[in-house]
Image 1: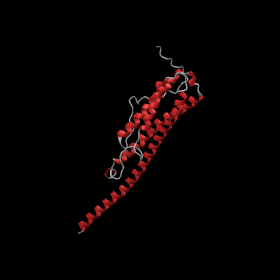
Image 2: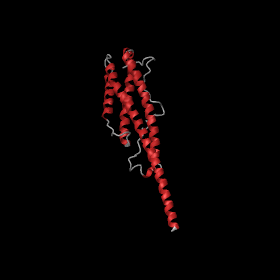
Image 3: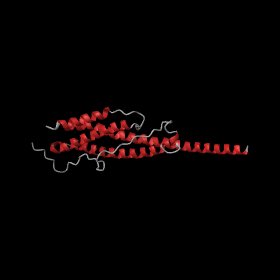
Image 4: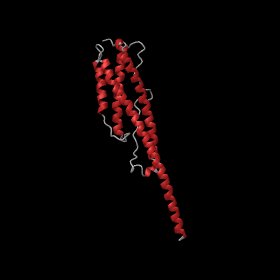
Length: 210
């Protein structure tokens, strides 16, 4: 009888330890998930700010005489593709394919903007336009902020993912809706800082000779 009571006591103690540890682990997951979702909201906000700036940029650039329309069209199409990507609501995505599509369209828009702003080198009157100068400064700040927010998101999401896969959370996290979150992946050449050419202080790039 004493042996049975001792065994029951040990089992009860183990259950109590697991419950206490589980509650602490659950509360930590809740806090980490909130941080991930907040960081994701910050990512979306800076991308939205860039998208909101583009119509004014297009309107300013298309007023320049003989501006290369194909370059401008690429920006317009890339922005449209960005707005067509719809991610599931409810915070940061857990589907790698969904995040990959989101990142691909956003990176394509970055590339189109970069090509457009390099092309502006050939248009001194446009470079001197006060509205364009203001837009380029705002876009430069936004591009830098995008890089910062993406890096912050990857950091907090990695911490959260580690917690989800750690004991004892790994025993119940999936059942309670704590799915790992996908991360932004480095692009080819990511060891070189992404460049959007806003430095128009130097000599203009000469147009190619036919």
